[in-house]
Length: 385
Image (tube, rainbow, N blue to C red; front, side, top):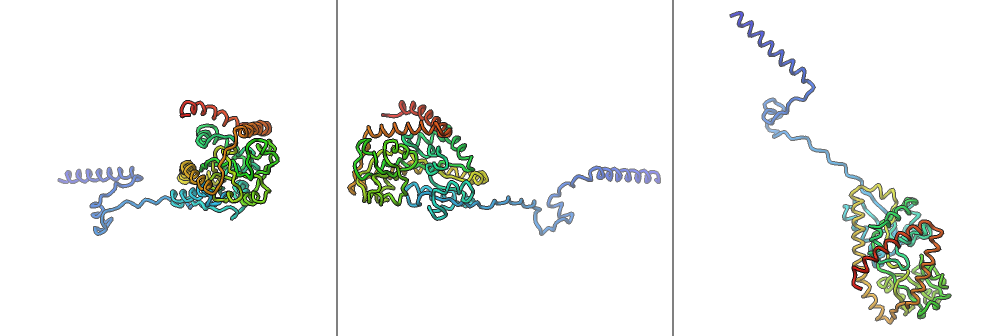
């Protein structure tokens, strides 16, 4: 009996030792999880505490809202030119839940409009709402991205920017100044302008004082006119007192608000000096690249929606405005084919001259010309004429 007892004791010790050895090998592994009933039996939790729950996940950090100050070159109540800028700010604010909050500043509130380019480049403001045509003093080739004399319609210009080399050339041109531009709206072509006397032939432009800016000014100077960069506020006064013989400003829906019909009754078309008006959101390049991905995507989508709105609303507004002007006794007229041919010839001279001395001008001009040539092949077969 003693022998059996001794044998049993030895077997028990061996079993305990084996178990102890096993736990010693796996001492660095976590013990198996306890189910709820086992946890209660072991006293790990009180029965009243209910089921054991996993620890709550840590909520991701919410990025600080980004606030941008956007200076406008156009008054906020101007159809399309101003209203699309205010619409952009509101759309982005709503789409991002104010994580990107853009404040629209009227012209001259923070600074004069034409100082906007340098202000964005230097980071004094985050963005400018306006047109690349305003920056020809800083970048002579910039107006190609706003619309040029005898340039294409808006849909062709947008196609070049999106599917040609347009946006790439725009980015390269502006990157040297630490800024980036986004096409962010479209407006219809301007009128050719208001004149105190009828303009029926090329000779009628000689020695006339005409308010016009950008490349259009270079064109009419070649035909003997005197170009003036008069502010919009001074146009009506200049036409009334005779210091201006003519002036181009905008399209009918804006011109009718400006009251030019009270000082001139000769309103001419087509707007040869700008075939389409691309509205630009000019932003500080670092500020744009620092945007969270969702805010950047929302900004780009809002610009696309603004372009759609401009295309649709731009045409819809003009017929009503023309009727209103006609009711006020304004004579709606078109330049003669002879005059348009002279203007076009002068524009081709400007392109040749500017291309010879400005590599950017030459490269951008050649790119758009090649794209338009291909696009015309489609227009000739795809559209009813």
